[in-house]
Length: 81
Image 1 (cartoon, rainbow, N blue to C red):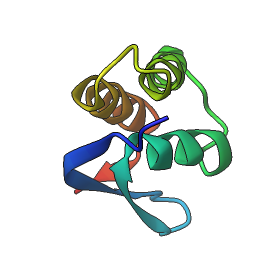
Image 2: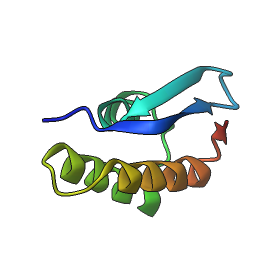
Image 3: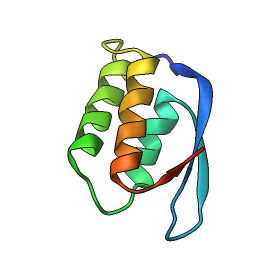
């Protein structure tokens, strides 16, 4: 499995806790979705999980993961920078 590095990282902040995490790779996105995501898991979260899994098995690209991850973060009301 490749790390699937992104061209530019994304910093995600949980507005409730103030915790900020920077995501640079598909693997980091997967870890964030699995371990550090807010309790709400909507349809974009499910899509991001699937896209991460696909990319880690060479069936999707890093750009696909980043797009899905951003959509999930917006859905979860996380702040992005």
